[in-house]
Each structure stands twice: as C-alpha cells, then as structure tokens.
Amino acid sequence: MNAASRQAGRAERDAGLPSRRRKVANFVLFQAAWFAAVLGAARQVPLWGTACVVAVIGWHVAISARPAAEARLVALACCIGFAFESAMAVQGLVRYPSGQPAAALAPYWLVALWGLLAISPNVTLRWLKGRPVLAAAIGAVAGPAAFASGARLGAANFTDSARALVAIGVSWAVLLPALMWLSERYDGVVVPRPGKAPHG
Image 1 (cartoon, rainbow, N blue to C red):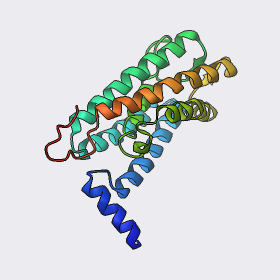
Image 2: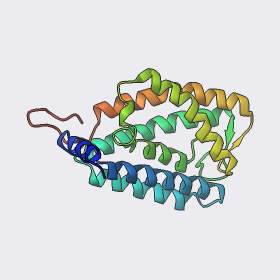
Image 3: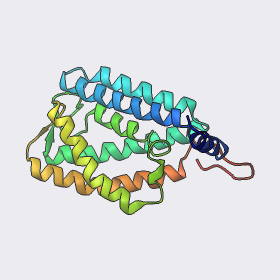
C-alpha cells in the first residue's frame, strides 16, 4: 500500500466512512448471496439461498455503527421490493419456478434480495448518494440486466421479455434513486461526528 492509499484510508476512518476492507467484503458477500438466492430458486430450493441472503444481511447489520438504522433501511427495501415484484407477478410478465406463496405475490427469495440490495447504499454505493439522475440511469440499465441474468440462470421466466424488461427498467429508474434517498435518512454505517445527531 502506497502513501496516498494509506492517507486516503486514514481520511475515511477520520470521517467515519466504511473502510476499503469493508467495501470489498460488502461487494463480495453481496455477489455470493445473490448467486445463492438465484441458483437456489432455479433449483427448487429457494429456502437455502434465502438463508444465505439473511445471513449476509445479518452480518452487515451487526457490524454497523447503528444497527437499528440499517435494519430499518433493509425492512423498507423489502417492503418496496414486495410491492414492486408482486405488481410484476399480477401483470403476468414474469413467472417463477419456486418461492411464491401465491401466484399474485412476489417470491420470498426475491423480496430478500431487495433487503440484500439495501446493504450497499451506505457502503459500496455510497458514491451514488446525492446523484439522483445518475442513480436513475444506472437503475434503468442495471435493473433489467440483473433480472435478465437471473432469468438466464433459471430463477424466472418472462412471458413477454420486451414488456417485462421495459417495465423493470422504468421502475428501477425510480426505485434506485428512492432507495439512495432512503439511505441518507437511514445511514447506520457512518459513525456520526460529535455534536451531530445521527439519523434513524
């Protein structure tokens, strides 16, 4: 590690920001849990993948400076995800091989993935805060891309690929900026400076 990297690391610690090690761990565990959930659903064992997601979320919350704030952000993301994914299911644009308690409801493993997404805004996606236009653009591309990847792995089936991907892209262009805004209100990762009241 060179002097510039060490200085940057000290500056992050002084500001209470997540360390580089935590950012790397957050990214790696997010990816591993996402694949576990998607592959578990594709292989008709969604509970196992969901358990991995819950474990990663639990790890993130437990090591946060203010666990309650991060837990609230995760809960809100799950509520948003449940509403959105259930709307997709009701429209019949996507079908799932496993994990749905009813045809008109989102699969529980997919709702859990929304909670998993919520562990990123205050860590690896922190640079996106205060940039709603950029968040909208990324959401419009990344949302459909992630969904299409899950479908290719067998976790979902599109009944109308074009309509489904457009609907997902438009929705994520709104939902990702909304999640980033919520992460500013419920930031349990950064250690508050003395004299500054924490949110959440």
